[in-house]
Image (tube, rainbow over all chains, first blue to last red; front, side, top):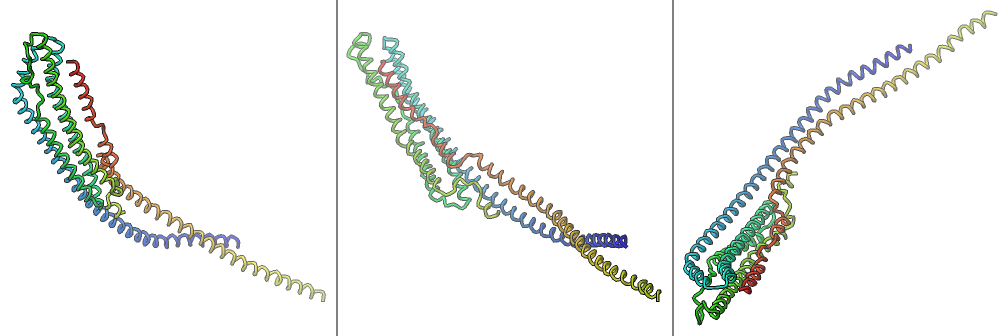
Length: 276
Length: 118
């Protein structure tokens, strides 16, 4: 009897298990079908969303890239123009002062003291060289400001793509570009200036072969050099503290305006936020 | 007369023994049914758990892999945008680079000294 009961129980469990597996197999099929349908729907929606994000991102990227390229080309053109103008101005100045330089060379040859002669010859060339050095330096500085401004423009474009109001930044960038252009023009004008010793005004009451004549010659040359020194450094400092400083301030101002935009350094596109 | 008690005993004894045995069989049968139902329910619950576990796991995996795929371009995009170093702090650092025009005063002083030697 006990054996029959055991067989009955085991048979019952086995039957239940078998029937349950069949029942679950059916329900599994329907559940799998439902899950697959749901997954397909989710996947389709996700794909659509992905395409939408990619398109928006691509458009924004193209816009930024175009803007960047335009600004870069504009900057390169201005740089090249300024370089060309400066070279032309220097060449013109060189031919203009050639005669003057030759005269000065002959006048400096009258100095008997070889040390002072060498120093005077050095000074005669030094002012021209210093002008070249500093005008080149200012142009490089302006190129640097231009590159910084380009970065500001890029960041502004990103902010604009993210839906931020960049009107004030655009105006600041425009002002900065104008300031840089003005400074370039001023630097080119400075490069065209000449600082050559004018020996026609260096006169002596006696022959330079005499000691008194030598003193008068040295004194006259010193005065001339001091005048040149004053003129050159006044011009260069005026440039540094004037248009050059204005250009820097304008770039600084553009950066400050940019920094005032909330979350301006947030690189994620607004399209990402809306999609996720 | 002597046989009567024996017959009575003989007849009564099987009747008394039979009734309790039938009751025990019925009780044991219903107990087995309960255990059968409990076992069946346990099996069904186990199967249900198995079904839930094995059907949900691949779905989770799919979501994870999709999430990874979505994250990768976002990271790439960020990396691409950040390589320029054009955050406001980067730009500020660029602008605050040493201003070489401060050397102008030094050049002026040096030339002035040369002039003193003349």
